[in-house]
Image (cartoon, rainbow, N blue to C red):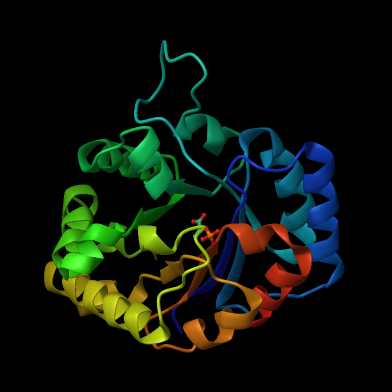
Length: 253
Ligand code: PEP
């Protein structure tokens, strides 16, 4: 079975003490993932090692960075490279979250270089894509999201692309409380899997987990994840409420 994944994205929230408390509350639920399931915490850089040490050994959950720089190393004050993340044992990194596309003006070509650096450093990129409201209203969301995949992933070979994770996150659903309907999510995920199959072959496309992101919560996770092409969720707000995220983990197929 394809990997089913609950990934938390804390964004720029929580103090160290709050982060420790939240992790403790979630870990206290003692949910052991099945072999085909993964639980990932994308946390701010200063909390990566705390998270890794708390979750990795006993629970087999993982810590993830929320970003890495698009250059290998050098005079980029304040930035963090994929190589640095690898050197402290981090195995996942979000690439191309819509907030970074919008506020840091990250474009498809830049994201392609980040994907390459992650892969070179044995980090699994969690590649985010998704359309803004105006595109959804115009009905051109499929072409828009396919182009995002084309710009940042189509230079890879089939074997490599089958190791990454994709998160479809319609921008109009992120942090807004509006969720794509289960049918809308399944429709887009199925379409994206078709785009990947056309480019890389069905075998590779079938291996790629496609997560849904956009106001996932305890009350809608099970229904969203029940769709055949929705392989879990990338969760912002609800991942910072222990009881919510615990239920989201339990909702994985
Ligand atoms: C996100 O941070 O990627 C996200 C989907 O946020 P939220 O769950 O709060 O909509």
